[in-house]
Length: 260
View 1 (tube, rainbow, N blue to C red):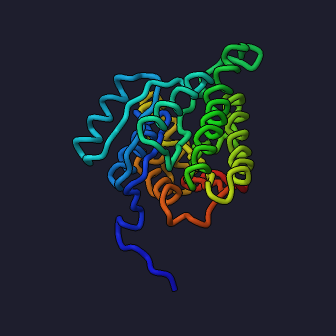
View 2 (cartoon, rainbow, N blue to C red):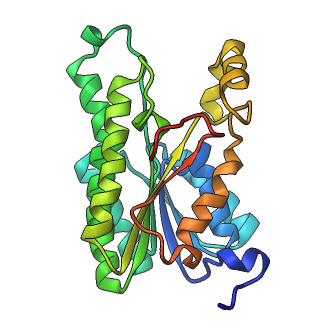
């Protein structure tokens, strides 16, 4: 039998550094705070530098860990390169990358999906994660190892009629998880979390009908609370998942039935 750490030490991230894109709000914020609380230094990346700075200050005050705020639009190849350069130069090495940034703009109909909207959705949801994984994953291999966590969506396997480009992009992210788990093996693990509906800040605009739909169709009868992403994220970030790679883990209250 193995020897297992007790309590929160099971998810000990002391001495590690994590980069979280879309890290200043929603699920990214929860993972940023959780990783820091468990000992990791963090790079908080999003398009709005002020939001990154505000969370970095909160992280430092609450946990004492170092938090580096970086403005980066992950849909922009050059800004992905700059994020990698900044993070690696500042900390020397990165142990954890969380590709969390994503977007799913509304559109009136498929013929009205513009080329600009299509390009934007593909850029943020799959192009950026590919570029960042390529850069950080290669650096992790050189430094002896690490872990990449992609944040997909159940739209990848159970898309609705109103999120076609988004579902296509997230299906690509699931595929990329499997591909890169082989590319960077054996020293770098690549896994994916596939959330269902979560009560992040954007959910404030959801009508009551949406919550009624959740109660009727989701086995747990509700959407997830943002902090309910944390357990799975800590598992994949920590050494407890040392034999897990290429996995896609659903966190959706049981709302989807198709295999990941």
